[in-house]
Structures are given as structure tokens and as C-alpha cells.
Length: 150
Image 1 (cartoon, one colour):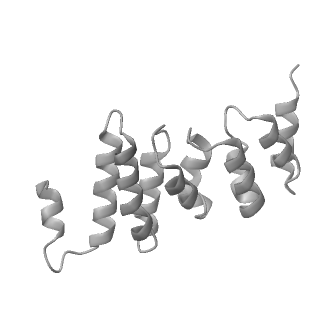
Image 2 (cartoon, rainbow, N blue to C red):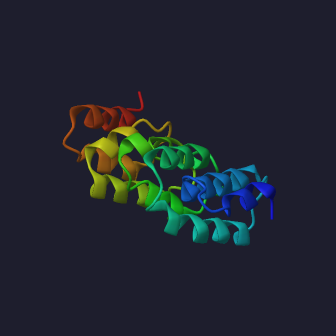
């Protein structure tokens, strides 16, 4: 076991769960090509700890996983239920979020999350259609602009 993780076992270690979460996510994203076992392990470790993590640590996790094409989908989905101040990098960049996931987030979380999703560089038609239904002029304008191909 790496010495960093050994230090976390010491009694009285401040913010132990935050540090475990940060260290494990850092180790995961450092893997060049994580396998299914790696993804399952990080998900099994992170999901239960997430509820105890500080907003700062959740922001770190979202930023670290945002562009990771191997990030566990269930972990990313759980993080996307956080306020946009925390999960914006995932909403904007995550390649593991399917159009179905994005539409579900728009429906479940509303216009704050939709505003970030609308800023994605590529939006599939079903996501654009969901954005067009959001009660926000900026989001609707982005959806209308995405349909305009001229």
C-alpha cells in the first residue's frame, strides 16, 4: 500500500475521507488505461465516501474526472446531481455522459444544469430538444442556434 494511504490510517488525521477520496481519484486518473476492475474499485470506494466529502473535494473530483473517458458512469451521474458550482466541469466536458444522461439531468435538475450543458461543443439532437423546453431564454437561444445549420 502506498505510504500516502498509510498516513491516512493514523488516528486523528484531519479530513480523512476527503483525503482518501482525493488520493484515490488522483491515482485513478493517473492510470493511462484503467480496466473494468479499476473502474469498479474507484466507484466502490468513492460513492459511499462522497456523501461525507466537502464541496471543495467534490469540485476537485469533478474537475479531475471531467475529461476522463474511463470515469465510472455511476460516479459521474452521482456527481452531476450536485449543484452546478461543483459539477460544472462534468456537465460541460465529460465524455462518459450519454445524451440520455444529459436529458435526464436537464429534466431532473432544471435550468442551472441546463445552462452548463448548453455550453457543450457538440450537442446531439435529443439534448437540443430537451434544452429547447427549458424555461430560460439563454438556454433556448443556444438550443435554437444549435438547430441552425446556416
